[in-house]
Image (cartoon, rainbow, N blue to C red; front, side):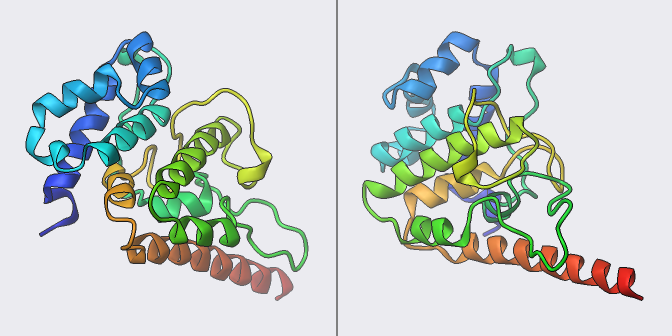
Length: 212
């Protein structure tokens, strides 16, 4: 079954679309509270899927709210972008130009360092949503600054995902799966390291041309 045709993916997309329509006060509540109005509205609409794992879906709705723009609904761009896989976004921070200017012999540095990424993959139980939410809040802030630097370097007001390699947004189904099935880390790792490898190869080719 294609990635976005699974029940989990469909509900994740529906949650992201619903959050995009919320007025700022309700969206702020969804960021603060796991048992938010937004969650219970989605629980009522998708009782079978969400009801099978309410705790994980509470975390999912809250994290999607963190990544949703704070402005008025009519000014928001859709959060979901099927081509922006979560692993890739964790590597480049949503920066279309990553890696940017590098010093001689400097290697591209992922937005989420490999060590922190490994900790995310290893996180289980209650630690997985804690890790994902922390990263989501930092990612939202990072993109306000243009997506540069790693997780430790960012602070400030949270906003949504901005311009990326394939446009704005992130694949929200990946976020849901990261919470609902934390043991399956292959997709996250594959897309993270594919993005890192492309950046390293691109940088290497550019240096070869410069030395020619």
